[in-house]
Length: 276
Ligand code: SF4
Image 1 (cartoon, rainbow, N blue to C red):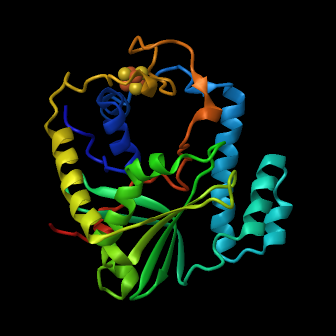
Image 2: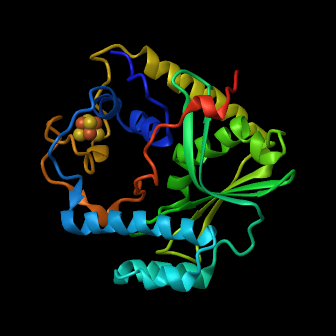
């Protein structure tokens, strides 16, 4: 079965395929709704997801110049207020260059369907440096090894090299000019900084090309269930796959994907083609 016509490869969908091909098929090809909870306790997790999304929006508004006291006056949730005050106290933006582009979307016709990313913040010193900032609102700080292994840590800098020349006076960024920074309200003094290099770029290029070819070439009925049953712990398809009924504790999740500020698919015609 072909991918839906408006489908775009993102770090989430590619990570889903790597974690479990069957999850990719159920979620993006079959668009299967399944009434299982992803985590326990459900209400706590939903609250955490909600304030994660609101935290991203607050930082977006802060970068756009809305006064901090105005933003703070609108925060009623004590957990969100704590994150916000930690953000202001540690100010992870203080040494970052300008211009800054919050919630910036990029796409490239690297393969079919295209690759897309929505960056929490891009901070650019034109001609010199590009810092990718990403806010991680999980309950505990993920390990460095986990973060370095995530496809996001590869796709975001890779796509910025491929498609970011508009942010750099029309000149593509060199891989060595890019850094990825993760910042955590739960561990504000322990950011993760991952550099990017030409060598990583070459490896990522080969990796993403092979991965996308593999997805496109997988016939119906051959999206296999993962053999790593730990991946099923937080998956809503557990009962469908006969992989257990009880959900894992959300506080153990190392990476929580908050909803993007907009889920409208990127209009590739407006981005411009990157032919490879
Ligand atoms: S429950 Fe497990 S096997 Fe089934 S889709 Fe989810 S991760 Fe894959």
